[in-house]
Every structure is written in structure tokens, then in C-alpha cells.
Length: 197
Image 1 (cartoon, one colour):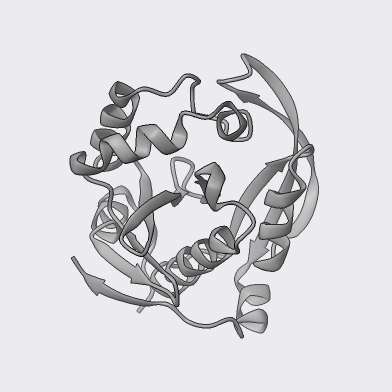
Image 2 (cartoon, rainbow, N blue to C red):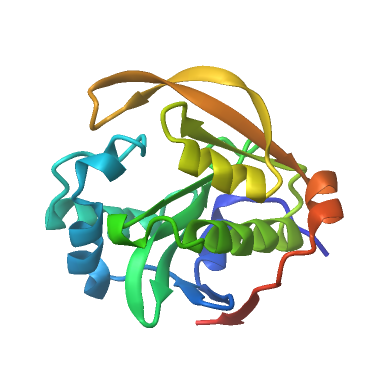
């Protein structure tokens, strides 16, 4: 039985480990702080991710890991060969519009990891929760992120201005939407598995 996406359930969802062909997605812990800070401390990542400051310190990573256990978000650390490479998750602070977000460390770009991780989280969200659609976005100057969303079945829904912390200003963002029905019809990509942590 599918369930609504309340705060408590989101926190419980973060206790799952999702596995794909090349990746393991799990809850970030304080032991991951150095790796998260090292990966996120790149202006090119921060300028394409609304809430990442730049420079990004270990203190930022500590705050992020601690808040991810209590916020209305399901956040997963992405690992390849037991090495952290980025983050992916669902932000449900506005419960009627859960939003997919992700970022990868620079040296992991262009290898299909973002698409693979996003698909695992999309599958998990639609299979476990009673949500009718997900939203996401990509800066208009970031065609790679747009490609990830399109490969996951998201459909363009317009352009909006969003504030980016690292830029200190707003920037145009292509907005995308993925409905449950479109996801169901496209669900031919390889499945991920999950287990309790």
C-alpha cells in the first residue's frame, strides 16, 4: 500500500540503502563529512545547485548531515566503488510538490552516474509513496543536468527565476515535471534494489 509523504516517513525512508548496477545510495553520516566537503567545494557545482554555499567547508557538511536526519528531505549519499561521489534526494518541504535534486563531484560528471542515481530515487519515491508527480530544475546554462532529467522522463514545464546561494542572486531555471503515469510507461530502465540499513 502506498503512503503519503509525511515528515516521519521521509526520515524512515532515509534508512534504506538503494543499489543500482554501479552505485550504492545511503544516508550520509558524520563519517562522510570530509568527503562531502571536498566534493561540494567547487564553484562549478555550487553555481548550479541552489542551496550550496561557496566556499563549502566541513562545518557546512556537518550542518547538512545533521539536518538531513530531521528535515522533510530524503537524502542519499551516492557511492561508486565505496567512494562518495555526490548526493541525490527528494525535498518534500512543500508536500504537494516533492522535488528531485542531485549533484556530483566534478570528476564524476559525464559518466551517467547522475541519471543512474536519479532513477533509483525516482523509482523508490513512486513505489513507496502516494505522490502523483515530482518536479525538478536545471539552470538554463546547465544542459548536462537538463539531459539527466529528460533521460529520466521529466518533461519541461517552463522557466522560473530561482535564487542561488553561491551566486548571491537569482538565475533562470528550466523547470521539469514527471508524473506517475509517465514514469510507469517509461519504467524500462534497470531496477534498483533496496534494503534496510
